[in-house]
Amino acid sequence: MTAIYPSLKGRVVFITGGGSGIGASIVEHFCQQGAKVGFVDIDDTASGDLVEAMAAAGHHKPVYVNCDLRDIEALRSAIGTVRAALGPITVLVNNAANDQRHAIDEVTPEYWDDRVAVNLKHQFFAAQAIYPDMEAAGGGAIVNLGSVSWIIGQGGMPCYTTSKSAVAGLTRSLARDLGPKNIRVNCVVPGWIMTQRQIDLWLTPDSEAELMERQCLKRKLVPADIARAVLFFAAEDSGGCTNQSYIVDGGWV
Image (cartoon, helix red, strand yellow):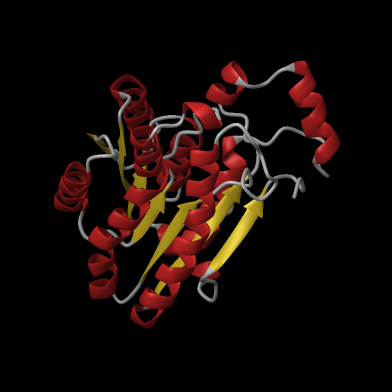
């Protein structure tokens, strides 16, 4: 059972990368709370299926907008579309990212900039576009998604780990600047979460054995483990919490 947060009922929530994986679970959990959800993604099929599944379950039908988050003007337009459809946005979940592997010698300046755009840049510009709604409403919550990859010193993707470490700094900066407006900014930091993508691309018997050795909890973590933490930091139940990074990794770190 998932906790019920009365403060989330009727709230307008904007989620990036909501079509699959952790993002889809976040969409589903907010819908179950009675929130009005808008989300962006680039996978029309998965996103459309999610929208219909939420509507069929009797929830407020989410608003989906196709958006490549590397295009900041497209992101701003998508936020405007969701605002026009659902009303002022008072919860932002910066979830979208892509942990594409890459070797040091293969990284070009263009690839570096692209990975920063995919994993970091849009988080700031989404917050910039949405926080006036929160200020006008008397407050709001921003939840950024980080990663333990940089904390544990994971190799093989320096552009990704650099971007994700910067999310912690962005969180603290936004929390300081937006706190006087009663806007809370926190970061949820996932460990290795068993999305279908992770299972298909990276889970092997050896990596699973390492996971079970390093985690304190001897089970695989799933997207719902992250979604539940996001709900808490979005709800007024965490009203005294801001400027924090909360690790959900089964005790790996």
